[in-house]
Image (cartoon, rainbow, N blue to C red; front, side):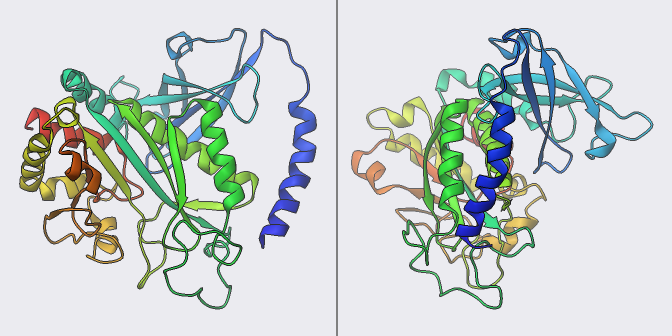
Length: 367
């Protein structure tokens, strides 16, 4: 499907949908969409309920449940899994007073499910809140046709080699901008702390940035940003891939680069604190790799090959303005001698809660 056909489909579908979304409902009855992470640790699920009040915080929302045997989170003989609302957003699709709420998942015995990494991350963030840890997440993703073919690519071949696509403009270089812009506005409306977007080096690959966020909010906003991305792309009948290496060969993979700093790193003379953090990170390289993709590091083996702007999985390195290093120190940080570091290892399908938790554990808690 080319972009003209895509716009035509979008307008046809939404011409009908908009008629119903404009219908006036009781001001005291709203829809709340509950969103959660399923048993894969990569995908999100969602379902909606009607409430007769407008919530101001997630604590006002009722705990709900779902069939965990259909999401890889429970057995069919004991399938109820609980949804605990944790972060509230405005709904950019239903508009009005309708809401979206991000939820944690808990088993029948009220213990967190295996993919509820937020539960453990929050404990770590409370331990280090005096350090004021900031995170900036760079989510790379690839737009795909529903047949699994990269969106906008020739059906019987490949586009021109990498080079003209990064931050590109033009129909021959940029594929899916309508989706990207729609997602950007949806995030802003919802209250997600999105700070920017850009086209990436692989044609049909894009990136959105979350942050800077303090503590647990980085993971919350990144997960909600992912949900909104899938939901917006669905309207255009385009799929979103978080595969770290969506196209084999000499093509860039996709990461979730994580920018990290503490109050001391951001203060005058903070470069020394950055160097201390890098030294600690170098000692836990293998541990971080095991948590930087949902498959224990196997996904990153396809991406971290030491080229195409990715570090090598085989060793730990750091460098100023070096995008092939494990830890990149931005040029501006080196010049001002304070700021932040960028960990380039996390894969595009990594759980941001695990990424942020292991960073504070290694750098601040020494665990």
